[in-house]
Amino acid sequence: MAKAGCPLGYGPLREELRRRVAHQIAHLFQGTPASELPIELPTRYEFAVNLKIAKALSVTIPPSILGRADEVIE
Image: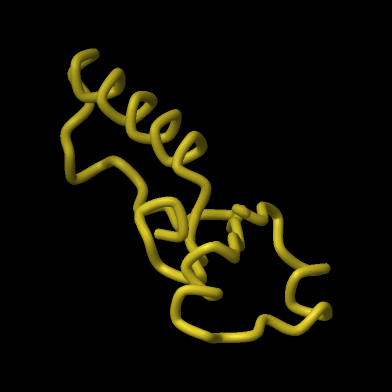
């Protein structure tokens, strides 16, 4: 969401989600019934800060938050 224009973004890693979806689709094509596929929760999350948007909104992001971010967009 931070890349799309929000000051902060937190959510599952999209690459991991795509891999898991591809894995489940492969099982469906191999004939596994959808009811037998497990429900999976994301295991890794990403936290991003968009400083450009934060500055435009006159919001100061504390250094402690910036230090925890996986990605800082300037």
